[in-house]
Length: 69
Image (cartoon, helix red, strand yellow):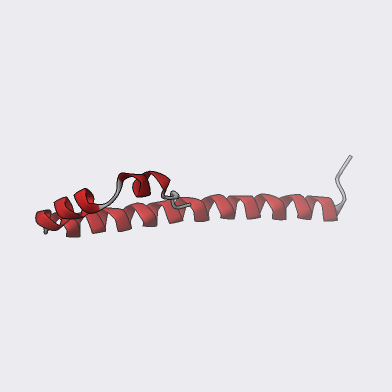
């Protein structure tokens, strides 16, 4: 038996929203990775700064940092 139009439309809309959400999460992850690579490349131009920064930063602050979502 065929589903009523409203149910089919609602299911399709929900599926599209979920797909859009997954695509946006994937896109944000790609953009985040590109930004990190660019930052690392820029930091790589100044090896002294990179060494001093990582040695000066407390270890606990890096462990407690929240990952980007």
